[in-house]
Length: 279
Image (cartoon, rainbow, N blue to C red):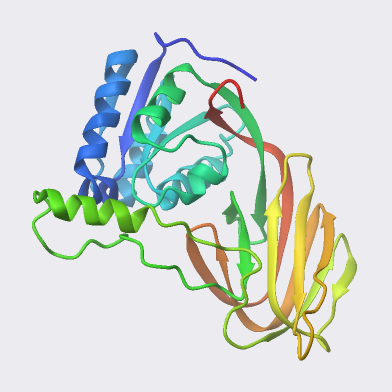
């Protein structure tokens, strides 16, 4: 794993949703990063400015201050520009921290910012679908509703301390993606490396796919149970294809679809995330 000197230049991109949701955590992250490295801070007002700032990073190492959606946005942009291989990303999670923490980023603003300064790059696998979308953590089919999260803060004065505390409390609640049955069932054909794991004649409650660290994705299918709990079907492979009537899926922090067929392939070691050196 590559390590980084604190004298290295950083490009700190602060997502607008993070500034709105928890300005205090944003301020702390900015102070810690600026004190430990030569940091240029960008405050984009929307996705286009976010993309422009990332594209103009030059030799600076990019640091995303924001939630899981902001991290996925950065990885997607670099993937589509074919620049992931040469760019190590860092993230200080503000808002919904579940995705970042599942990838090994420390909980807490100060700890995450210190990991940016003192950590090491770890290469991680990525799921890439046939529409060039990416999955960092996990995807679930059917899509599972997100529990209360503060993606869109209610229109109250964000300067009130109790409001910031409430937003942080709600945003910190984890989102459980894989293997949680949704209301109703689906008839899906799930193929792993060309072999059928479950076919359309077997209703399923949930399917989850998670990238690993060895070039293989872990697949779990929960068949519909009419009596005793059905045994999950497990497999691992480099490509996963799901076919069925219009279905939606949750990939990391977003719901996509409906689609009738989607294939995901594992891109081994496709992207680099800076994590604490001892992980």
